[in-house]
Length: 350
Image (cartoon, rainbow, N blue to C red):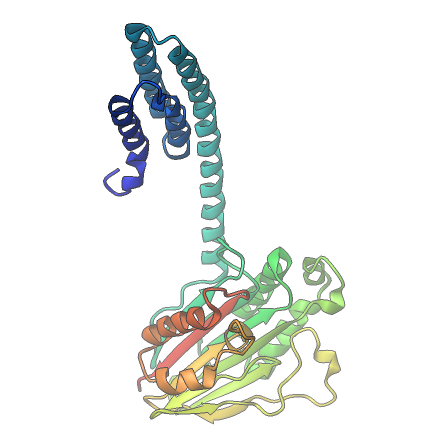
């Protein structure tokens, strides 16, 4: 109760009704409001305290009715007794549902830790931070995904977005992430890594995860490789929004010009796509994001001005930059983010 004063409201209501009953004339039966007390307690308290408070109100009303010979008040006492029994049962049901919800959230938290493993704040020459928001209220994971692998070829990252929402999208994201975490250490380049991910989604078992037409199963993704030494970054885009690079207050869009199709649509290629290399020097910032960021709309339907935001904010440390991005998205959308959002901010420090 010290942490949440609202829990005192049933006691406050009891005292308030008692004071009013003493200050008002007999023709104003304020005591008939007492059944509201155990009903309120049921929404806030466990079963036993709810019963105790209801019995206290019942006893007080019954004693008042006997001492004052106010027999109609006995009917109010009966109402308090009936409401108390119902309130105790309602409190029991509420506690059961809260327990179930706690278990579900525990499972969701465990799922998030397995799928979206924490990215360390520093890996080699990089300072890194991540942001993940789901469109589904109270959900922990959705169709967006990201991962990092520190390999002998360099630091490799993936960020992507599965078509659709809900459990099917989550299952596809899990398949892609599982494949990435294995192939990232073995593939000699990003082209081979993309082929391994493509193969994963072409398998029948992965197609079954879509719970629908396998032809509609696909995911956009950006594969990024940053060597431990050197001053460049290699990007292979599979239909994904291009990353942004911040340098000395200026913003560059690292567009690969000829991106590959989304994963599982590689058969549409007429010529093979190739990764592209960009400069990434010490002090440069890099922002990877899903379309939930760039396609956030305001009340008038205007998209979030990501380039303008990055011009001002992609100069701060990664953790602060993503915190500012989160707040900017909330402000732009009026606290109505209706799509999954994932973002990774990177600062090369050496």
